[in-house]
Amino acid sequence: MADASQYTILTFQRRPGLWRASISPKVTSGATIKGQTMLGFVTEDDCDSEEAAETAAKRAIKKL
Image: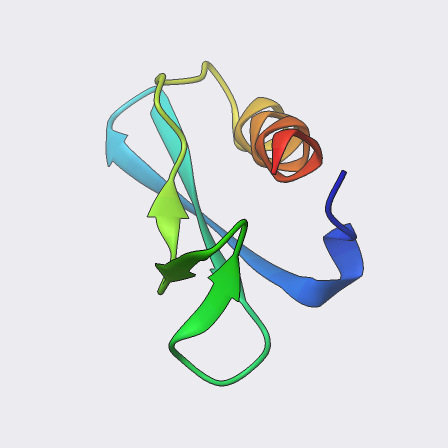
């Protein structure tokens, strides 16, 4: 389980009513997680609200 404090979460609205979150490590770019280089990623599914997108991002971080 990754530490959420080591990541920056930015929520954005893809289309009216559809939200996603971008997750980026706070360390320098090119950080390795589980042996792979990671620059950042976006949550897979659209959410109905900004809060739901942030919650989805926190769940994704826990899966790392």
